[in-house]
Image (cartoon, rainbow, N blue to C red; front, top):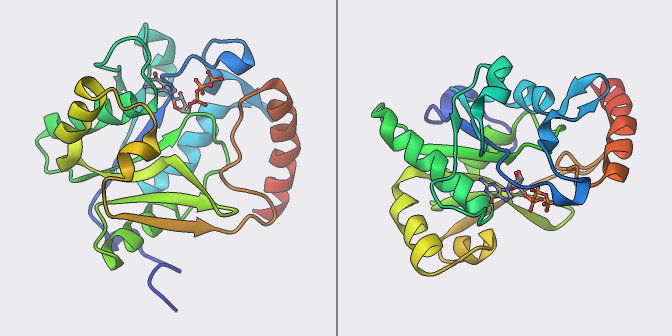
Amino acid sequence: MTSTDAASPLDFPPTPAVILAGGLARRIGGGDKPMREIGGQTILNRVIARLAPQCCGLILNANGNPARFAAFGLPVVADSVADFPGPLAGILAALDWAAEQRSGIQWIVSTPGDCPFLPRDLVARLHNAQGEQDAELAVAVSDERAHPVIGLWNVRLRDELRQALISEGVRKVDRWTARYRLAAVSWPTAPFDPFFNINTTDDLAEAERLVALDATAA
Ligand SMILES: Nc1nc2c(ncn2[C@@H]2O[C@H](COP(=O)(O)OP(=O)(O)OP(=O)(O)O)[C@@H](O)[C@H]2O)c(=O)[nH]1
């Protein structure tokens, strides 16, 4: 067994996760996509339920009035870079939040707020791969496709990210991560892709079907 197959949560440093909900959700008609419901629960509730047992805390990255998320009881951190420059702005906001905590947080895991079936071993396997490969970042992969917003980020990289976003105008996550030693961690896609995410109303319907499959598999 390689150590990426299994890991105890004690094997890696305490790691908070940021749930990225700062986008405009244009393909689904705007609004807060994570507040849409599938199987009688918000997508956000499902993301929280997957991540909370794996992390030492959760934060929500969202723009606009944070009061609309009050019921979830999470710190809400807005982008510091204006005009919706994409998910890198949310990752930067989370890294800055971590540095401000002054509790020695070294790593943050990021996930989108529209990905309700995240693996229960996400954080452990990202950390294991990072450690084994002495990588600077780790990113999730399924079906040979990288999911650049689902990753493990070192708080140390925040000023380089700020520079890339603000001074160089970098927008694509994988354009930025290509600068670093990156560990890619692959998950199986049976019975379905755990990184299935919801972009459209058709995806919402598909997610309803997967909720039932997921309940059977659990
Ligand atoms: N903080 C922040 N997050 C963003 C921004 N744009 C997208 N995201 C987040 O990045 C993840 C992937 O986003 P996309 O699928 O590209 O964008 P989206 O807003 O979800 O949907 P579309 O507008 O339909 O593309 C989601 O979790 C978004 O909330 C942004 O400008 N700022």
